Amino acid sequence: MNKYEAVLFDFDGTLVDTEWSIYEENCAIYAKEGQELPLEKYAQCIGSSYDTWSPQTYLEELTGKTFDWETIREERNKKIRARLETQGLMEGALEALEFTKSRGLRMGVVSSSGHSWVDNWLEKLGIEHYFESVTCRGDAPRIKPAPDLFIKGAERMNLSPKKCLVLEDSRNGMLAALEAGMDVIAIPNRITKVSDFTEATIKLDSLNDYPKALKKLLSE
Image (cartoon, rainbow, N blue to C red; front, side, top):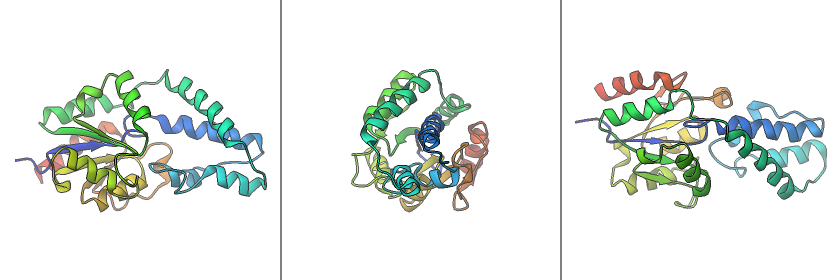
């Protein structure tokens, strides 16, 4: 019997490199004000929300100005979506899904983003059929780094959290999964590489290393 019965995948930054486009567009907003947005600062909100750390509040603190964020966000999001239309899955993502399936493990998505975002991209990328459940912002009281979304994801699959393995790119996501009682494979991307993943069960350089890591964990 497998140590795990399911693998729960984060979405943004784990399956699709959405976070870099969002970061670059935020950097462009900062540049217009003669400011910089360091990765070390920005990574604090990855996997969670601006309630954790806000680049908007930080820019206002740096400049002493207030901004029409609703209009700025609208323009920024149009540019982000246009950029993402030309992107596919992260390198190794499809192979990771296929390998997980080949090992007889069930799969779900657990994301701090909303369903309108995640469900749309899963369908566009043609990978929605891999996932038994998709748990997003609004499906549980709190988002990551709180454990609620992961607990809900396991509950929807009628599984104990201990039977779920998590793939995460962010520290907020890792902390949420660990608090939920799940083992975590951390796979930092070019934004979250600055974060601390020492508490992860295993840390990998890329999704290409995932099949080998999963084999190892299943054999323990």
